[in-house]
View 1: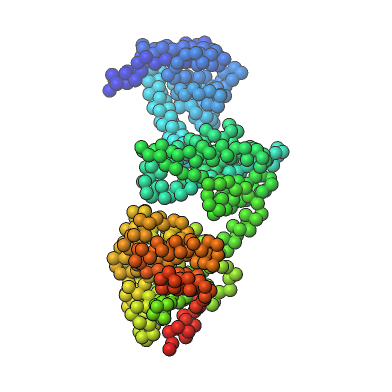
View 2 (view 1 turned 90 degrees about the vertical axis):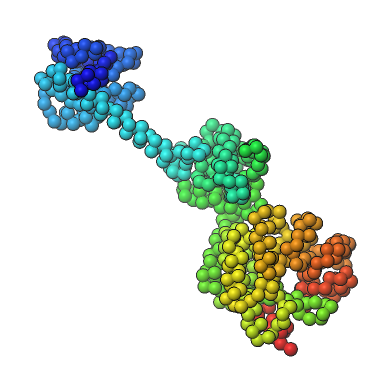
Length: 574
């Protein structure tokens, strides 16, 4: 044990600061007596001590409290606030005063002893305890620094995080409320990042975020500050004061972000969208500036992404409109207010009704001045379209079950239900459809599932879900054909039971562009698949379809979409 103590005292360099010659010599003598390997540098004033500390290394400091000009307490405070020196400090005094001792310990000293108690054995304990206390103190300081970094720094990108963004944005308002001049807030996120993350994996997503953060940081001015706010969203607080200055920054920033990323042996293309609000033009508080920049970002993404949008009053109106619609959709879903209208599908050759398309409508309980296309767009943007899809499917199964139980429709009659791309990302869609169909005793063959031609049919997951639905007996219809998305190879996919020609192609009939209609019809006839022409409104359009062997017709020529009651009275009651 004794040898272990002496090992801790080997090669120690101690700085002894005391203006009293006798006290200074006594401490030096006792330290040497404690261990002959201890080296003591003694000085009579703080000025010389600071010079020593600047140029030499010391393991410990003993300082007298009552010093001329500068007290021991002031000396400790100076070291803590004005230097990076981290050395255990013991304060010496001839006077026993609890207030003084606590003052020094709180300031950062490791111990406080009376000069009358100094002896070799006491000094050994003081040295060992003070160094251990200093080690603990340093560990706490380092731990606090790590916690501070965790609290303030985003660990993935190295950028300051949302906490620091919020704090610094408020600080900018405090500064600019006194000093004239404005600043701008840019909110930026990566387009379709979730798709990249889901398809290529989170490790690739993390690499992309790190690379994007570096590009942003390297392409903004020194006076701008960039933060990672969470997910794929970044915030930039810029001292650029007006729209003209920002318009010079944004193209450079977007160009560098739109350059393909070379990650994991592949090039990944990822565009970005930016929303911008400027103080004081657009807001008077940090909260409103952020809200307005976020609105602008939403509009930038809503208009197709890969663009920048400045905030203006029209944006606020559009954003609030979106919130209004979203709230209306949520209430309708909760209360099951949505209803379904039906539009007949007629076979010309058989001169009879062969099916109907189910179309979403607001329920009679509602009085919202909201169009259905507007409703569906907001529902798709917010993910609410998935819940709408299941409610519509249940309404259709319930109605179909009622009609079949009363022998109102024959076995060939099928109702078409539109599927959104979001629904086809749900792995349990087949299970949920089957559960609902079984509940109402409806066979899958009596349900047609319409998917838009714009859907990415080459996506492996989507194709797998559609194949499972088809194998289960649901008929898959390719809707909106002719809008330019589907390839010939996709048309040959065996999952499709029917092709529906888009209204835009039908509208070319009896115009200078009608050759497009005939070309599309001829191509589809070679596939030997049933074809539905939608949007038929005139006799000439009907005749043209009949002339190219398009048998099934849907459109205002026969009927607009109607309630189930009207549909039944008009088409199912003979």
